[in-house]
Image (tube, rainbow, N blue to C red):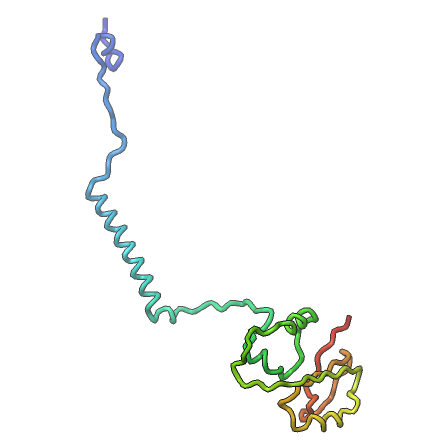
Length: 176
């Protein structure tokens, strides 16, 4: 009988089969592993150094900043803008926003400056102010002690001269 080669042939002859273990995964050489760890360490050190240099150097001022196109709904108001009367009463706030601003109660008991108390005068009119020359004479000389507001119909356009105490004091009305 003809002998067979291979694992079955060795079984037929009564011999133990020889099993060859072939290792498919070879471990990395120690030198290559050390080199990769050295590169990783250098990368981490370089990252920390670059963050430090960017944070504490003048280079950050050279980088152009992207300007935001975000526009706030209301202009940023300072303490002075809340205290002093506005130079021009024309605004774009609706009645709800006006009510909200008027309802703010200051939390400071003492003011950080010398405060002069004022009286507010509001003239409600449909057209020209009656007795405007008399009121002009009444207000003359006491400009720091009062605030004047004219609330009229939206269709009325006052024509007070720039020297008048009523100039630029109209509050815009809204048509409902």
